[in-house]
Image (cartoon, rainbow, N blue to C red; front, side):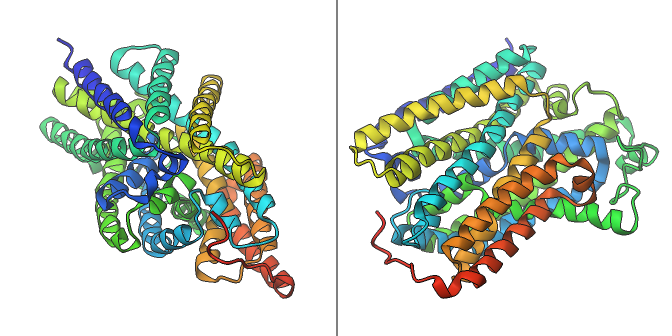
Length: 488
């Protein structure tokens, strides 16, 4: 009996059952998009973490650590800092104010403060979400293809088809209820994978009499420097830029719509403290484990062993662990991909239906119509993401980095200033959205600039300055704050 396949099939059945069981929980589009704001703090915490760390964490970061060595510690550290920061600074205020404004999506929340500029803010936000989430979604589907290829010998294309079919089905059926509860299961599997697999690797190295430092000490990374160098052999500004690049992953968390929606869905703002503790307790061992998987893989196999560095996690699982356990843990990688992809599908659907069709166009339709339309768009966007995944040859790490920078810089500075400074004008909001988008696209295309200083850092800083500067310039004409109850 193929125990790896058995474990994987059990996982898939469990996920599909959750999707079917939660089908009846959706009475209206508010239920479909934010679960009626009635999720408990444990579910919210695991859902936020599982959605936040996609196939990138299980495949992309270990692959980068395998190729580059310990310098990827800055990426892991930046992510943990970002998680801690936005749970403390953003989560509670966003939960409170989104309910006061009657907003169930990020674009509607951003627009709801103003009498003027609402349509511009919603449409621009929706276009930015669709543009970057398509790349993000494609990265997750690509991850499914890689995992199933390594584990079962399935063709990459067939793996992508299977993964996208499962995601589209249970997201369409159960909406946010299904996504949140499957995330709970997926989050547990993911963190278990990231803790158990590095331990198994260290045990194997000990049995072979090999030390990590000894193995990596005489090894050069993919860029020709020591695997044990925290700066990749660089000094001066080049070293500082590399560290800033890694730490700048922290900035993106404040602008990820699929994560911010989790804060809106919790039962009460007072429950944020419980969720925050759980999320941070999840993040620290998870990122440490992802980094160690790559380093252990390099110590075991050396450079050049893999035709695709992002296949290292499923390879180690199938070679180091009993088949039944490998099947469960490899499901963790599929879980990482699914838990992010389903959330992104929901955010895109909500942006099109709620922000554009309902709010911007002013179409007054029944909840039943909104719910059915949301399901239709979920299927359509899922298929578009699949097509991009099939046609792209980029690594998961680079695709996620691009989307992370764009979303983080477009929404992060604006949201932070709206919640904490409260002098943001609608012109400043539009300027921040537009500058974050444009700088990300342009800077990413100019390789020499991105190598000099990360687009994740540059685009965030520029967007922040634009929101702040434009708001100061237009503050005297800004008389368009609105009451909390006027947007439903």
